[in-house]
Image 1 (cartoon, rainbow, N blue to C red):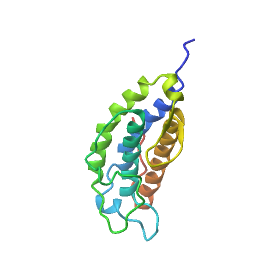
Image 2: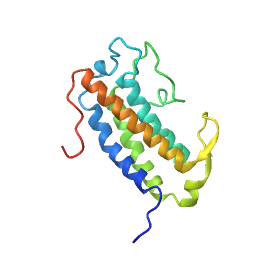
Image 3: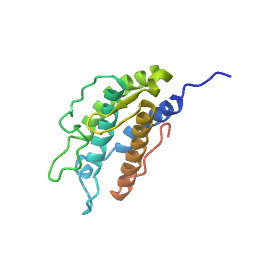
Length: 165
């Protein structure tokens, strides 16, 4: 039996999220993406921003220098900014599509030694194993997809479709 690289299950989740992200934002109007339904919760536009920022930051930590069109909004994990109009969801989708293949290639090329290296996320403090950082960021993608999925229903949109539906 072939020994699997310890990152193979994380890549499988990365691939799943790659397909879920466009589905979870599909059809949400840019107006609705900013609707907080009179709550202090993060709206869909901010959550989408955060999802792209996670991939961009993970690429950076893994050693892939990428740029994104929405760079001004994708900086240092800013909390939601009241009164700010975030870019259209379609613009974030373009950044996602640009970042994703390069990040996936990098993840697939990592060795066990690289995964065990202690690295720091700029601006976030202590060093952690690269494998742990990757796992945390992919977990955060799951969380973001779930939040946007809930917003879909609260805003009156149909449930997210899974790839292949």
